Length: 414
Figure 1 (cartoon, rainbow, N blue to C red):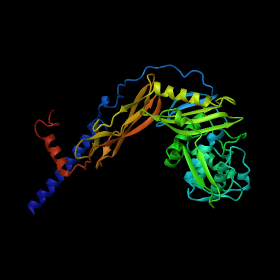
Figure 2 (cartoon, one colour; figure 1 turned 90 degrees about the horizontal axis):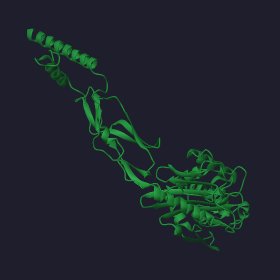
Figure 3 (cartoon, rainbow, N blue to C red; figure 1 turned 120 degrees about the vertical axis):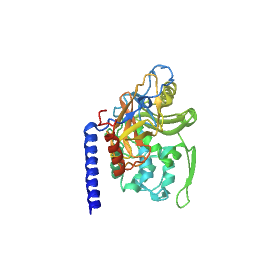
Figure 4 (cartoon, rainbow, N blue to C red; figure 1 turned 180 degrees about the vertical axis):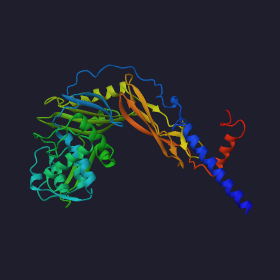
Protein backbone atom coordinates (compact mmCIF):
# COMPACT_ATOMS: atom_id res chain seq x y z
CA UNK A 1 0.00 0.00 0.00
CA UNK A 2 2.86 2.33 0.88
CA UNK A 3 4.53 1.60 -2.44
CA UNK A 4 1.26 2.27 -4.29
CA UNK A 5 0.95 5.71 -2.64
CA UNK A 6 4.50 6.58 -3.67
CA UNK A 7 3.71 5.65 -7.30
CA UNK A 8 0.57 7.81 -7.23
CA UNK A 9 2.43 10.78 -5.75
CA UNK A 10 5.24 10.45 -8.26
CA UNK A 11 2.74 10.30 -11.13
CA UNK A 12 0.99 13.44 -9.89
CA UNK A 13 4.37 15.14 -9.44
CA UNK A 14 5.53 14.26 -12.94
CA UNK A 15 2.20 15.31 -14.42
CA UNK A 16 2.49 18.65 -12.67
CA UNK A 17 6.03 19.17 -13.94
CA UNK A 18 4.85 18.32 -17.44
CA UNK A 19 2.07 20.90 -17.30
CA UNK A 20 4.48 23.52 -15.93
CA UNK A 21 6.88 22.80 -18.81
CA UNK A 22 4.15 23.11 -21.41
CA UNK A 23 2.83 26.33 -19.87
CA UNK A 24 6.28 27.93 -19.55
CA UNK A 25 7.30 26.84 -23.03
CA UNK A 26 4.11 28.29 -24.50
CA UNK A 27 4.60 31.52 -22.57
CA UNK A 28 8.23 31.96 -23.59
CA UNK A 29 7.79 31.25 -27.30
CA UNK A 30 5.60 32.78 -29.97
CA UNK A 31 4.42 30.71 -32.97
CA UNK A 32 6.93 30.68 -35.80
CA UNK A 33 9.95 31.99 -33.93
CA UNK A 34 11.90 28.81 -34.69
CA UNK A 35 11.08 28.88 -38.42
CA UNK A 36 13.99 29.92 -40.63
CA UNK A 37 14.11 30.23 -44.43
CA UNK A 38 17.27 30.92 -46.45
CA UNK A 39 16.41 34.03 -48.51
CA UNK A 40 19.18 33.32 -51.02
CA UNK A 41 17.34 30.19 -52.13
CA UNK A 42 14.22 32.22 -52.92
CA UNK A 43 16.00 34.90 -54.94
CA UNK A 44 15.48 34.71 -58.73
CA UNK A 45 18.62 33.53 -60.49
CA UNK A 46 20.92 36.09 -62.13
CA UNK A 47 20.27 35.82 -65.85
CA UNK A 48 22.16 36.50 -69.05
CA UNK A 49 19.48 38.08 -71.19
CA UNK A 50 19.62 39.44 -74.75
CA UNK A 51 19.91 43.18 -75.22
CA UNK A 52 16.70 44.90 -76.24
CA UNK A 53 16.53 45.12 -80.04
CA UNK A 54 13.75 47.68 -80.18
CA UNK A 55 10.06 47.53 -80.98
CA UNK A 56 8.48 45.67 -83.87
CA UNK A 57 7.80 48.75 -85.95
CA UNK A 58 4.70 49.37 -88.02
CA UNK A 59 2.42 46.38 -88.46
CA UNK A 60 -0.23 46.22 -91.15
CA UNK A 61 -2.69 44.66 -88.69
CA UNK A 62 -5.17 46.87 -86.88
CA UNK A 63 -5.02 44.57 -83.87
CA UNK A 64 -2.16 42.25 -82.93
CA UNK A 65 -0.73 40.36 -79.97
CA UNK A 66 2.16 38.05 -79.09
CA UNK A 67 1.76 35.63 -76.17
CA UNK A 68 4.07 33.27 -74.30
CA UNK A 69 2.38 29.96 -75.04
CA UNK A 70 3.62 28.37 -71.82
CA UNK A 71 2.43 30.99 -69.32
CA UNK A 72 -0.14 33.05 -71.24
CA UNK A 73 1.85 36.22 -70.53
CA UNK A 74 1.49 38.97 -73.15
CA UNK A 75 4.85 39.88 -74.69
CA UNK A 76 3.56 42.49 -77.15
CA UNK A 77 0.21 43.96 -78.09
CA UNK A 78 -1.26 46.51 -80.45
CA UNK A 79 -4.92 47.12 -79.59
CA UNK A 80 -4.67 43.65 -78.10
CA UNK A 81 -7.76 44.05 -75.91
CA UNK A 82 -9.98 45.69 -78.56
CA UNK A 83 -13.03 43.81 -79.83
CA UNK A 84 -12.86 42.98 -83.53
CA UNK A 85 -14.21 40.58 -86.14
CA UNK A 86 -12.06 37.45 -86.49
CA UNK A 87 -13.31 35.68 -89.65
CA UNK A 88 -12.41 31.97 -89.90
CA UNK A 89 -10.06 32.01 -86.92
CA UNK A 90 -13.44 31.37 -85.24
CA UNK A 91 -12.99 27.76 -86.34
CA UNK A 92 -10.29 27.25 -83.71
CA UNK A 93 -13.00 27.23 -81.06
CA UNK A 94 -15.41 25.36 -83.34
CA UNK A 95 -12.92 22.53 -83.76
CA UNK A 96 -11.81 22.15 -80.15
CA UNK A 97 -15.41 22.30 -78.89
CA UNK A 98 -16.42 19.52 -81.31
CA UNK A 99 -13.40 17.42 -80.31
CA UNK A 100 -14.30 17.72 -76.63
CA UNK A 101 -18.03 17.10 -77.03
CA UNK A 102 -18.38 14.50 -79.75
CA UNK A 103 -17.17 11.03 -80.73
CA UNK A 104 -14.92 11.62 -83.74
CA UNK A 105 -16.22 8.40 -85.29
CA UNK A 106 -19.79 9.72 -85.31
CA UNK A 107 -21.49 10.11 -88.66
CA UNK A 108 -22.95 13.58 -89.32
CA UNK A 109 -25.63 14.32 -91.91
CA UNK A 110 -25.68 17.37 -94.18
CA UNK A 111 -28.75 19.58 -93.74
CA UNK A 112 -30.26 21.96 -96.26
CA UNK A 113 -28.84 24.89 -94.30
CA UNK A 114 -25.35 23.42 -94.25
CA UNK A 115 -25.43 22.68 -97.96
CA UNK A 116 -26.37 26.32 -98.66
CA UNK A 117 -23.30 27.88 -96.99
CA UNK A 118 -21.27 30.30 -99.11
CA UNK A 119 -17.71 29.79 -100.28
CA UNK A 120 -15.26 28.66 -99.16
CA UNK A 121 -17.17 25.36 -98.99
CA UNK A 122 -16.71 21.66 -99.63
CA UNK A 123 -19.86 21.52 -101.74
CA UNK A 124 -21.53 18.99 -99.46
CA UNK A 125 -24.99 18.04 -100.73
CA UNK A 126 -28.08 17.74 -98.55
CA UNK A 127 -28.42 14.19 -97.26
CA UNK A 128 -24.75 13.27 -97.59
CA UNK A 129 -23.02 11.83 -94.53
CA UNK A 130 -19.47 12.27 -93.27
CA UNK A 131 -17.42 11.11 -90.32
CA UNK A 132 -16.88 13.88 -87.76
CA UNK A 133 -13.09 13.43 -87.82
CA UNK A 134 -13.02 13.94 -91.60
CA UNK A 135 -15.12 17.09 -91.31
CA UNK A 136 -12.69 18.50 -88.75
CA UNK A 137 -9.78 18.14 -91.18
CA UNK A 138 -11.80 19.80 -93.92
CA UNK A 139 -12.77 22.57 -91.49
CA UNK A 140 -9.24 23.41 -90.34
CA UNK A 141 -7.18 22.71 -93.48
CA UNK A 142 -9.45 24.18 -96.17
CA UNK A 143 -11.64 26.34 -93.89
CA UNK A 144 -14.86 25.00 -95.38
CA UNK A 145 -17.89 26.92 -94.12
CA UNK A 146 -20.37 24.12 -94.75
CA UNK A 147 -18.33 21.73 -92.58
CA UNK A 148 -18.63 24.17 -89.66
CA UNK A 149 -22.43 24.13 -89.88
CA UNK A 150 -22.61 20.33 -90.31
CA UNK A 151 -20.55 19.91 -87.14
CA UNK A 152 -22.46 22.55 -85.18
CA UNK A 153 -25.83 20.98 -85.98
CA UNK A 154 -24.56 17.49 -85.21
CA UNK A 155 -23.15 18.43 -81.78
CA UNK A 156 -25.79 20.87 -80.52
CA UNK A 157 -28.84 20.38 -82.75
CA UNK A 158 -28.68 23.90 -84.16
CA UNK A 159 -26.17 26.59 -85.06
CA UNK A 160 -27.68 28.94 -82.49
CA UNK A 161 -27.26 26.47 -79.62
CA UNK A 162 -23.76 25.59 -80.73
CA UNK A 163 -22.69 29.25 -80.77
CA UNK A 164 -24.12 29.78 -77.30
CA UNK A 165 -22.14 26.79 -76.08
CA UNK A 166 -18.94 28.12 -77.69
CA UNK A 167 -19.46 31.50 -76.02
CA UNK A 168 -19.96 29.82 -72.64
CA UNK A 169 -16.77 27.83 -73.19
CA UNK A 170 -14.88 31.03 -73.97
CA UNK A 171 -16.13 32.55 -70.71
CA UNK A 172 -14.88 29.46 -68.83
CA UNK A 173 -11.44 30.15 -70.29
CA UNK A 174 -11.55 33.74 -69.05
CA UNK A 175 -12.39 35.27 -72.44
CA UNK A 176 -14.87 37.95 -71.42
CA UNK A 177 -14.70 39.91 -74.68
CA UNK A 178 -15.67 37.09 -77.03
CA UNK A 179 -19.08 36.29 -78.51
CA UNK A 180 -19.91 33.76 -81.22
CA UNK A 181 -22.87 34.07 -83.59
CA UNK A 182 -21.57 31.79 -86.34
CA UNK A 183 -19.48 28.60 -86.20
CA UNK A 184 -17.55 29.51 -89.36
CA UNK A 185 -16.72 33.19 -88.74
CA UNK A 186 -18.93 34.79 -91.37
CA UNK A 187 -19.58 38.45 -90.56
CA UNK A 188 -22.27 39.16 -87.98
CA UNK A 189 -22.90 42.24 -85.84
CA UNK A 190 -22.33 40.46 -82.52
CA UNK A 191 -19.58 38.09 -83.61
CA UNK A 192 -16.30 39.29 -82.13
CA UNK A 193 -13.24 38.61 -80.02
CA UNK A 194 -9.98 40.33 -79.06
CA UNK A 195 -6.42 39.30 -79.94
CA UNK A 196 -5.88 38.49 -76.27
CA UNK A 197 -8.97 36.26 -76.02
CA UNK A 198 -8.18 34.56 -79.32
CA UNK A 199 -4.62 33.81 -78.18
CA UNK A 200 -5.99 32.29 -74.94
CA UNK A 201 -8.43 30.13 -76.90
CA UNK A 202 -5.62 29.00 -79.18
CA UNK A 203 -3.34 28.20 -76.24
CA UNK A 204 -6.11 26.05 -74.82
CA UNK A 205 -6.85 24.37 -78.16
CA UNK A 206 -3.21 23.47 -78.79
CA UNK A 207 -3.11 21.62 -75.47
CA UNK A 208 -5.49 19.14 -77.13
CA UNK A 209 -3.40 16.56 -78.98
CA UNK A 210 -6.08 15.84 -81.60
CA UNK A 211 -6.46 19.52 -82.45
CA UNK A 212 -2.70 20.02 -82.58
CA UNK A 213 -2.27 17.08 -84.96
CA UNK A 214 -4.99 18.34 -87.29
CA UNK A 215 -3.63 21.86 -87.75
CA UNK A 216 -0.12 20.55 -88.54
CA UNK A 217 -1.34 18.13 -91.20
CA UNK A 218 -0.38 19.13 -94.76
CA UNK A 219 -2.88 16.96 -96.66
CA UNK A 220 -5.72 14.59 -95.81
CA UNK A 221 -8.07 12.40 -97.85
CA UNK A 222 -11.43 10.86 -96.99
CA UNK A 223 -14.71 9.78 -98.56
CA UNK A 224 -18.38 10.40 -98.04
CA UNK A 225 -19.91 7.68 -95.84
CA UNK A 226 -21.48 5.80 -98.76
CA UNK A 227 -18.21 5.96 -100.66
CA UNK A 228 -19.70 7.78 -103.66
CA UNK A 229 -17.48 10.84 -103.23
CA UNK A 230 -13.75 11.20 -102.54
CA UNK A 231 -12.32 14.39 -100.96
CA UNK A 232 -8.72 15.56 -100.53
CA UNK A 233 -7.98 18.68 -98.49
CA UNK A 234 -4.72 20.65 -98.33
CA UNK A 235 -3.58 22.93 -95.54
CA UNK A 236 -3.87 26.59 -96.56
CA UNK A 237 -1.61 27.69 -93.70
CA UNK A 238 1.61 28.44 -95.60
CA UNK A 239 3.16 29.72 -92.36
CA UNK A 240 3.97 26.07 -91.66
CA UNK A 241 6.63 26.22 -94.39
CA UNK A 242 7.56 29.88 -93.94
CA UNK A 243 8.87 29.77 -90.36
CA UNK A 244 11.05 27.26 -88.53
CA UNK A 245 9.18 25.56 -85.72
CA UNK A 246 5.73 26.64 -86.94
CA UNK A 247 2.90 24.41 -85.67
CA UNK A 248 -0.17 26.22 -87.10
CA UNK A 249 -2.76 27.52 -86.66
CA UNK A 250 -5.56 29.20 -88.72
CA UNK A 251 -6.13 31.75 -91.48
CA UNK A 252 -9.24 33.87 -92.00
CA UNK A 253 -10.80 36.54 -94.22
CA UNK A 254 -14.09 38.40 -94.47
CA UNK A 255 -14.92 41.86 -95.78
CA UNK A 256 -15.37 43.11 -92.22
CA UNK A 257 -12.44 41.34 -90.57
CA UNK A 258 -9.86 41.67 -93.33
CA UNK A 259 -7.06 39.13 -93.51
CA UNK A 260 -6.49 37.39 -90.16
CA UNK A 261 -4.09 34.77 -88.89
CA UNK A 262 -3.34 32.99 -85.65
CA UNK A 263 0.13 31.46 -85.62
CA UNK A 264 2.14 29.32 -83.22
CA UNK A 265 5.83 28.46 -83.06
CA UNK A 266 7.83 26.08 -80.87
CA UNK A 267 11.53 26.68 -81.46
CA UNK A 268 14.73 26.94 -79.43
CA UNK A 269 12.94 26.68 -76.08
CA UNK A 270 10.30 29.27 -76.93
CA UNK A 271 6.59 28.68 -77.43
CA UNK A 272 4.98 31.72 -79.04
CA UNK A 273 1.39 32.38 -80.12
CA UNK A 274 0.60 35.34 -82.38
CA UNK A 275 -2.66 36.93 -83.49
CA UNK A 276 -3.16 39.49 -86.29
CA UNK A 277 -6.61 40.82 -87.17
CA UNK A 278 -7.40 43.25 -89.96
CA UNK A 279 -3.98 42.66 -91.54
CA UNK A 280 -4.83 44.25 -94.86
CA UNK A 281 -7.59 43.75 -97.42
CA UNK A 282 -7.41 42.54 -101.05
CA UNK A 283 -5.08 42.51 -102.86
CA UNK A 284 -2.74 42.46 -99.80
CA UNK A 285 -3.13 38.80 -98.96
CA UNK A 286 0.47 38.40 -97.75
CA UNK A 287 0.44 41.15 -95.12
CA UNK A 288 -0.70 38.66 -92.48
CA UNK A 289 2.45 36.59 -93.07
CA UNK A 290 4.68 39.66 -92.84
CA UNK A 291 3.04 40.73 -89.58
CA UNK A 292 3.21 37.24 -88.07
CA UNK A 293 6.88 36.80 -88.96
CA UNK A 294 7.66 40.24 -87.49
CA UNK A 295 5.95 39.27 -84.23
CA UNK A 296 7.72 35.92 -84.01
CA UNK A 297 11.13 37.42 -84.77
CA UNK A 298 10.55 40.06 -82.10
CA UNK A 299 9.78 37.32 -79.58
CA UNK A 300 12.82 35.26 -80.48
CA UNK A 301 15.20 38.24 -80.50
CA UNK A 302 14.08 39.78 -77.21
CA UNK A 303 13.03 36.86 -75.02
CA UNK A 304 15.05 33.95 -73.65
CA UNK A 305 13.88 30.86 -71.78
CA UNK A 306 15.27 31.18 -68.25
CA UNK A 307 15.03 29.05 -65.13
CA UNK A 308 14.34 31.63 -62.46
CA UNK A 309 13.64 29.29 -59.53
CA UNK A 310 15.28 25.90 -59.13
CA UNK A 311 13.75 22.97 -57.29
CA UNK A 312 15.42 23.04 -53.85
CA UNK A 313 15.89 19.98 -51.66
CA UNK A 314 15.96 22.18 -48.55
CA UNK A 315 15.38 25.91 -48.12
CA UNK A 316 15.01 26.08 -44.35
CA UNK A 317 12.73 24.82 -41.63
CA UNK A 318 9.31 25.44 -40.15
CA UNK A 319 8.36 25.26 -36.50
CA UNK A 320 6.36 22.27 -35.31
CA UNK A 321 4.05 22.52 -32.30
CA UNK A 322 4.07 19.53 -29.92
CA UNK A 323 6.35 17.57 -32.24
CA UNK A 324 9.19 15.15 -31.61
CA UNK A 325 11.49 18.02 -32.62
CA UNK A 326 10.93 21.76 -32.66
CA UNK A 327 11.27 22.12 -36.45
CA UNK A 328 11.04 20.13 -39.68
CA UNK A 329 12.97 20.98 -42.90
CA UNK A 330 11.06 22.24 -45.97
CA UNK A 331 11.70 22.36 -49.73
CA UNK A 332 10.34 24.02 -52.89
CA UNK A 333 8.11 21.59 -54.77
CA UNK A 334 9.03 22.29 -58.40
CA UNK A 335 10.88 24.89 -60.42
CA UNK A 336 9.94 27.71 -62.78
CA UNK A 337 11.22 28.39 -66.26
CA UNK A 338 9.78 31.24 -68.33
CA UNK A 339 10.51 33.66 -71.16
CA UNK A 340 12.18 36.87 -70.01
CA UNK A 341 13.54 39.99 -71.64
CA UNK A 342 16.16 42.45 -70.40
CA UNK A 343 13.51 44.86 -69.14
CA UNK A 344 11.46 42.33 -67.17
CA UNK A 345 11.44 42.60 -63.37
CA UNK A 346 11.24 39.29 -61.50
CA UNK A 347 10.22 39.02 -57.83
CA UNK A 348 9.19 36.28 -55.42
CA UNK A 349 6.80 36.43 -52.47
CA UNK A 350 6.86 33.80 -49.73
CA UNK A 351 3.75 32.90 -47.76
CA UNK A 352 4.48 30.47 -44.90
CA UNK A 353 2.36 29.13 -42.07
CA UNK A 354 3.66 30.23 -38.65
CA UNK A 355 3.90 26.62 -37.51
CA UNK A 356 2.62 23.13 -38.16
CA UNK A 357 0.85 20.97 -35.60
CA UNK A 358 2.27 17.50 -35.01
CA UNK A 359 1.94 14.89 -36.36
CA UNK A 360 3.41 16.17 -39.63
CA UNK A 361 3.22 14.19 -42.89
CA UNK A 362 6.06 13.96 -45.39
CA UNK A 363 5.41 16.41 -48.27
CA UNK A 364 2.82 18.25 -46.19
CA UNK A 365 2.14 21.75 -47.52
CA UNK A 366 3.71 24.44 -45.36
CA UNK A 367 3.38 27.49 -47.59
CA UNK A 368 3.72 28.86 -51.11
CA UNK A 369 6.24 30.79 -53.18
CA UNK A 370 4.66 33.11 -55.77
CA UNK A 371 6.73 34.27 -58.74
CA UNK A 372 5.98 37.65 -60.30
CA UNK A 373 7.13 39.11 -63.62
CA UNK A 374 6.41 42.84 -63.88
CA UNK A 375 4.04 42.54 -60.89
CA UNK A 376 2.01 39.79 -62.63
CA UNK A 377 1.94 36.41 -60.91
CA UNK A 378 3.09 33.78 -63.41
CA UNK A 379 3.43 30.78 -61.08
CA UNK A 380 2.86 29.66 -57.50
CA UNK A 381 4.96 26.79 -56.14
CA UNK A 382 4.23 24.87 -52.96
CA UNK A 383 6.59 24.73 -49.98
CA UNK A 384 6.47 21.22 -48.47
CA UNK A 385 8.00 19.27 -45.60
CA UNK A 386 11.03 17.07 -46.29
CA UNK A 387 10.02 14.33 -43.81
CA UNK A 388 7.31 13.27 -41.42
CA UNK A 389 7.33 13.95 -37.69
CA UNK A 390 5.34 12.39 -34.85
CA UNK A 391 4.00 14.01 -31.70
CA UNK A 392 6.22 14.50 -28.68
CA UNK A 393 5.85 11.68 -26.10
CA UNK A 394 5.54 11.77 -22.34
CA UNK A 395 9.15 10.56 -22.05
CA UNK A 396 10.33 13.42 -24.28
CA UNK A 397 8.48 15.93 -22.10
CA UNK A 398 9.96 14.36 -18.98
CA UNK A 399 13.48 14.58 -20.40
CA UNK A 400 12.90 18.26 -21.17
CA UNK A 401 11.71 18.86 -17.63
CA UNK A 402 14.73 17.16 -16.09
CA UNK A 403 17.06 19.30 -18.23
CA UNK A 404 15.28 22.44 -17.05
CA UNK A 405 15.40 21.45 -13.39
CA UNK A 406 18.99 20.28 -13.01
CA UNK A 407 21.78 22.77 -12.15
CA UNK A 408 22.73 24.82 -15.22
CA UNK A 409 19.32 24.28 -16.76
CA UNK A 410 17.15 26.89 -18.39
CA UNK A 411 15.15 27.79 -15.28
CA UNK A 412 17.95 27.43 -12.72
CA UNK A 413 19.54 30.82 -13.12
CA UNK A 414 20.46 30.60 -16.82
